[in-house]
Amino acid sequence: MKRLFCIAGVISFSEIASAFTSVSPATIATTRPLQTLLYTAINVDEETQRDISSFEEWASYGGIQKAEGFQLVGEDLDGFLDVSAMTTQDIPAGSPALYIPNEMILSSSKAMEEFGRLEEAEEILRANGYESEVRQYYLMLKILAELEKGEDSPWFPYLNSLPRYYSNGASMTLFCYTCIPPLVASLCKEERARLNNLSVKRAVPFLSNDIKGDAK
Image (tube, rainbow, N blue to C red; front, side):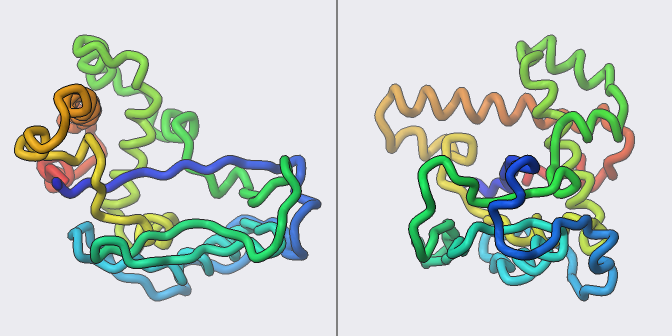
């Protein structure tokens, strides 16, 4: 499989924050300055260990609240750390599991507001038939911009907790396609093509040449 750094999404339940345990919601800036925590640069090599404990500390100081009994658990999966969520007690159906402040959410809308519209890049996406993916494209650029900052990024603990290795369609090599049924291979190739078309970086002025030229 090819190395691939992936993006995870989150949902905010600001209207139901009262359902959680007693930690007052607060932004990172008003709780604990991130620069006081010692972090290192982000390593995207496949064998890099995921730092879940620092992520959980960062999430707590950022105002993310958990339902009673909610926790992250890890297990070894083919030599890589797989992390999932579970609860140690029943949570009623329809109840929120997490409260995430708006300030702690990476979104395409915020990225587009921060960067402005990149007309050349958008035109390339439209020409390749990916106009519907423009918002996802800006979110990807935001991730790349924060990855480039390394330890100086306020999102460092989150990014450093993500897996570096994925066994999905977009990460497959040409050899992988010969090992799976034709229909599945076709769907995986479509996903890989979508990722490649969203990897338009040459028209992005704020990314370094190192980032633009890095296939990972």
